[in-house]
Length: 95
Image (cartoon, rainbow, N blue to C red; front, top):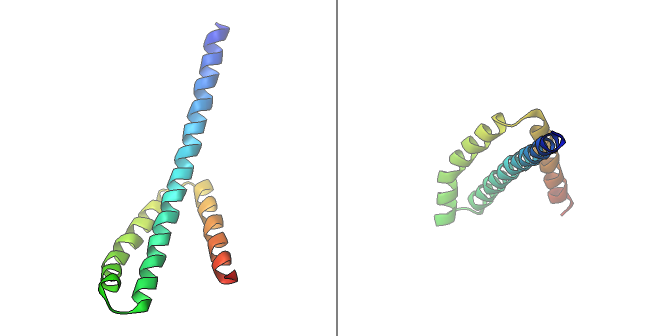
């Protein structure tokens, strides 16, 4: 009977660990999409050419996906994403 309790405890720990990984994965995905949005803006700012055209076509898709993903985040994930984005913004301003 103690063994079963121990197994349940391990299962609960594994579930919590998987949940933490899932939360981090969603935030990392949102950060990746944000980087793609920034890259699109950079290509568009450089003007003409195939890269600017492609970026202009892809930008609405990236924005929609980012918005959709952010809406699905928990409060904790939103805070984690906001903190990461603020750090990116600060590092870009320092550069």
